[in-house]
Image 1 (tube, helix red, strand yellow):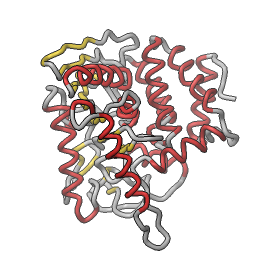
Image 2: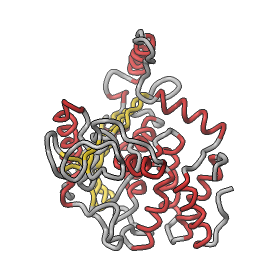
Image 3: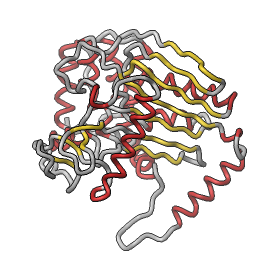
Length: 348
């Protein structure tokens, strides 16, 4: 499939596939929404290319098709959400809604998530909070695939961090892996035949490689200063696993199987802050407006362009909403097979 697919058709197909394998309406909605966030905003490694993976996890029993989420308020501004082995987006969207509700009352809402799974693009959840007027953070740890600085074995997961702040037009939005690149990007480069950048991946001995087929582990963010990325990966561990009582990265079963029947028992963590509880909503908006004006007006070096976190994503989102999405060949083939095997209308 080389022609662009309209956003609405792609979202419909994702929901139809998830529903066809038995997911409840909320799971199909939230899983599709998180993947579409990735695809629309150019986070392709965490976009709709994950649909076959989530489908396999639902069919195999790793993910609960009809989870019963349980939220417990522990203090005025904190709580815990038991995900009941839900698909990660289902649990995390719900946790962020609870965090925003807590913040509306207490000024801050922090929610730990237990018994969850891979949650996809972290920015999907902070953006949802920003749309409610909240400044937010989301993080999750994952199975080991990132070596430590000067390390020669997998230790941390890619352990993403996202922060969003409401702003005029579009929020300030950071969404980053604490590895040099996310692992799903290695898979994407394998499917498209793209060479990896220098200093982002290592082979099984820990030596650097640019061949995505030889990449056995990722480097921490920072290149020669990778100790900083490794420490940031530890922040995700502290919030997602230590504070929630869930598994550390080395103890989490591999995302890629072979076991797709056993829940992975992952944790995650979200925080929402209500600007009105601090300097006040109007002053916070004035501050972020001034900050972004200064940032975007800052001179660029020759050949460069200064951008705020999220600017690249908003530009891509506008283009993709207008022109549709062109699927990579591996994803297009897998979608065609899903349509055939599940007897549902294909992506057109």
